[in-house]
Image 1: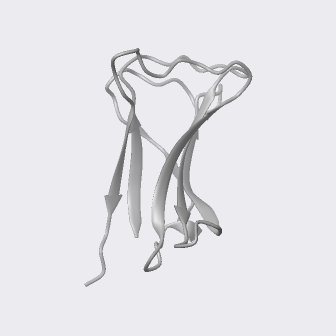
Image 2: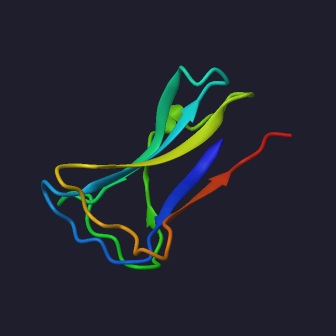
Length: 103
């Protein structure tokens, strides 16, 4: 079960209504066909800005938090319009995912 997911970027990203980015954590079945959004965050006006090196909690979709056996998690970033820079040339963005494992 996914407990939380956070996005960490190395540079500040200013919220913008049309030129923004969306970070998405998706669960996908073993065939890579069926999937569902587990959590997401967008740097639009409602979603807010990102501060360099400060984790941003992604908004979870509780109904999709359970990860069935054989499924994997995929992290992706999409950009609206011309997009927005979210890393520098020599740095990376990270997604931290906290899982609860049933024993």
